[in-house]
Image 1 (spheres, rainbow, N blue to C red):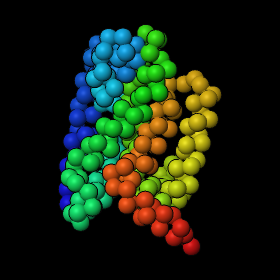
Image 2 (cartoon, rainbow, N blue to C red):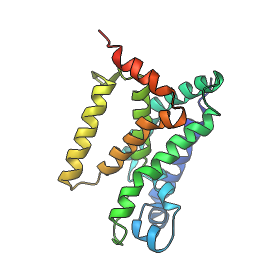
Image 3 (cartoon, one colour):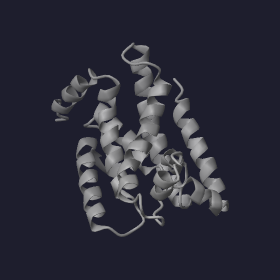
Length: 211
């Protein structure tokens, strides 16, 4: 089966990001600016900011992770759709990705709604959702930290949330750790929202220890 939806998202993200590298006016027009969202009703920014990246490395990392985990999730959704458990796989994957962009943005929109200078960009919130949806379906599969050290995904997920919370409280830097956290939460719960019966699959997978 072909995972076309994920590839389309990656292609559009790469295209828009490359355009924004050359056009700073477009860059700021598409970014997440809570002041403009709330006071100027530019609601589109809640979605468009996820297709904009700060530099090539930022874009490359997000797209590589999305390609790896997104392909896995879309294949799983296609299987569930074929078996009649859920509706159209492409629609569900799109809701997962775009819904995570919106959900992960809400805390920043609320917190910085009166700060005209605050801007945020990047697909990290949605990518986190895809990663944690993958953890939901297979909590004991290995995620290779730094592409070398194998870590069970459920443990990696816990460490990831802890680290993101720590860095968010610490502040500073240009990484939106808050979006990572809320994106992860959305991704972990989305399968159950999509099909409540999947919670039994998660519990069964979780208690089936890998040793």
